[in-house]
Length: 204
Image (tube, rainbow, N blue to C red; front, top):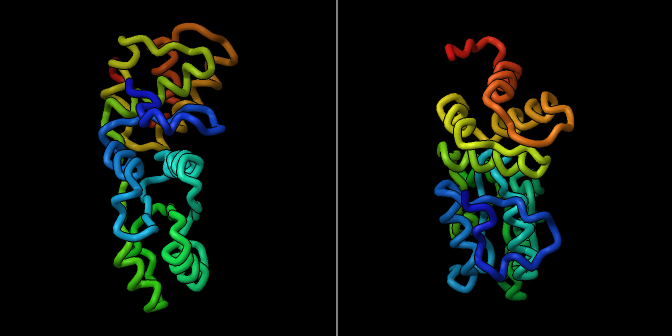
């Protein structure tokens, strides 16, 4: 697991260190680590729900004193247009966050559309098997539940490759654990999976 494998100077911020770097988000982390190479002072970070976009964005903003605009696709277009211009005029970085890239926004303001076309977009992808297991294990370990290798192996072939599904699995696992600490076992994992997807019968 590569928990918080962010560049060292990213660690000095005031939130719990809970972002895990994997193949799905490594390029995004690398790009945000080098704002000096950005062609403009604004960048857009997109990715699936629960993928850690906002957490990564807050880390970037804390490190660089950048302005963070979350849910940018729901912000009025005039406001985004003026924010983009302000970033270029003042030299202060801005990071906009959204679930999808601008082609899905249906931007009606031509001046904003042209600026978005010049804005680099970095994407967090859906998780691979390793990252998904690492995320689940890290969240459970924060509550005192240790996911042993055999339980990781059991889950790896049964989990949906989706951050929201992983989040729901953790919620159900914590309900089943009922405040207990120690090893998170295969029977517990099986029960949590059945709670999440009761129509699925586990052949094992």
